[in-house]
Structures are given as structure tokens and as C-alpha cells.
Length: 211
Image (cartoon, rainbow, N blue to C red; front, side):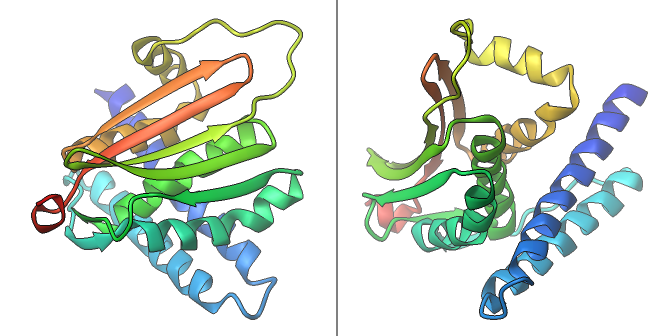
């Protein structure tokens, strides 16, 4: 029980760190007011989650009709300075049109932040984010070009990846993504190859959009 409690608190602190990083980057550019406001809201949401976790309360989602592609555009804009600082390039390819899901915008923002920051910090320099429709679902994928290694890593299936990241501090973000997507009725997968990694989430389209 204590271990689960510590993991939950570490995840809450991890989610607070992300918007604060984005906020620090945005404040260096006076024209980034929307990014600053969004990062402040994300930080406030993470603090609220931390407070609920400390008091033993379950997190609360506030789903609404959400156009994901504008949210993705804002997310990439927020993290391009961080990518540029490490020599990475973020490319966005939108192929889902005006796709709408019913989701909590701040929870989804946190999940997207984690996927993109994971690619920037642990992946290769060429990072491509894409959207597509798959039947009644919206697919969002984040792929990086991989780093040069002396030998190719072992192929990992999702179960083994969960076991690996669960043992260390760097697994908090992916656990948050998996839990957030599951809470919205979606799915998350991660695949790694010698030339990069592909993370993908699927979210149910809103009923009127799916129709």
C-alpha cells in the first residue's frame, strides 16, 4: 500500500513538473501569452490532483467536446523551444479533419505533453506527430527517429515495457498516459525499434463526429 501511495504521489509531482517547464520556456518569449496561460492552468490542475492524492481522494475528470488537432498544434508550439534546445525537430501532420472527442482537455493535454517530452528527452531528433481516423476512433501517434546505439535494443511488447518503466523514476509519464487514455475509453501502445519508437493513443470519437 505504501509503495502504491508513493508511486501515485510521484506521478502527481511529475505532472506538475511538465507545465512548469513549459511555463519557464514561454516566459522567455513575451508573445507566448496563450502558452503561459495554458501552462498555468495545467500546473493548477496538477496541484489539485496532488492535493486529492494526499487526502486519499480519486481524481475527477471534466469531459467536454474537444477538438484535438488545435490542442495538438498548441502543444507542439509550447514544446518547440525545448526540442530546439536539444537539436530535435517537431513535425505535425494532421489527417483527421475536425475530429472531436469527449474528453477532459487538461487530462488529455497532460498525456500529450508526456508523449512529446518523452520523445524529446529519450528519443531521436526527428519527431513526427500525426493524427488519423480509424473507424470510430481518433488515432494520435508520436514517432521519433531513435538515437544511435552500439547495438539494437531488444524488442519490447507493451507488458514488458510496463514492467521496465514501473521499476524506475522515468516511468511516471507513460503510466499517466496509459491511465488517462483508459479513463477516456481509449487505448495506448508503445513500440520500439533500432531506429526509434512509436507511441500511439486511440480515443473514441464523439458520437456526432463518429456518425
